[in-house]
Length: 78
Image 1 (spheres, rainbow, N blue to C red):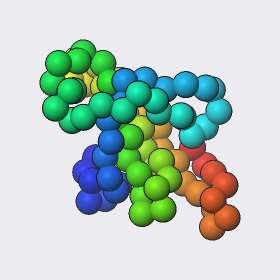
Image 2 (cartoon, rainbow, N blue to C red):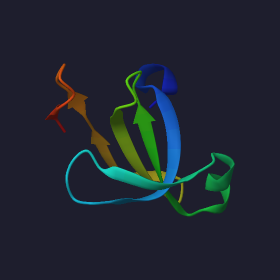
Image 3 (cartoon, one colour):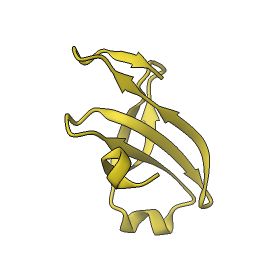
Image 4 (tube, rainbow, N blue to C red):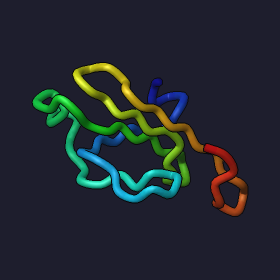
């Protein structure tokens, strides 16, 4: 997945909650990911909505979620 096609990429240690979209918590820098075995990548659109999540474990994507939104901001599919 590239930032050009899916927006800004941000990095997190984990997520909380069970509702979609996931709530990514504990932001880290891209440089911090080099010292971690597991982290989350979140991709955000121009309206700062989470459009994709990847859980990275030992350099491989283990879990992936994608989201789309209605014009009113409500999630339309996950």
